[in-house]
Length: 109
Image 1 (cartoon, helix red, strand yellow):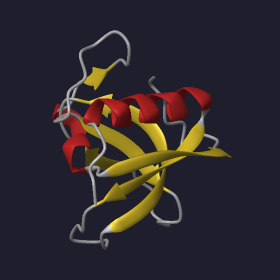
Image 2 (cartoon, helix red, strand yellow; image 1 turned 90 degrees about the horizontal axis):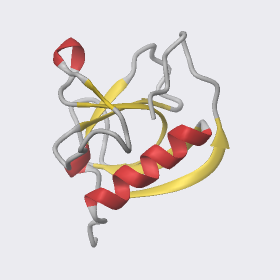
Image 3 (spheres, helix red, strand yellow; image 1 turned 45 degrees about the vertical axis):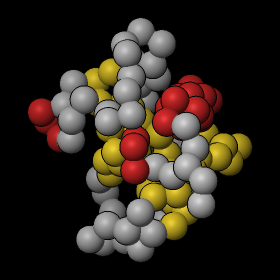
Image 4 (cartoon, helix red, strand yellow; image 1 turned 90 degrees about the vertical axis):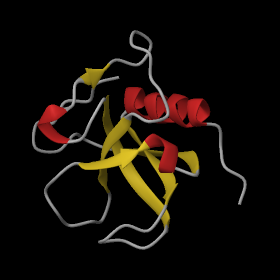
């Protein structure tokens, strides 16, 4: 599988977030999920996971492949925003599927 350029992935995530549309990402296996495609509601980019992370603004801050993409995995049936390391995302594509932000979460793009 040929990996997509991290900057292209960042641009697609931001584009989806600005339109309040989901994005599909191909992500490796984690402790809780197998490798494969995930449909994700995009919420933000940060420098780190959790409360240690600072929010980054697309178009204003310098985003890098090692930064974090925060998003809710559609169909995960949990109530938290997941964290995805941009360098681990192999592929991304827009879905055109609209979403309404959950739990008063802010979409920061």
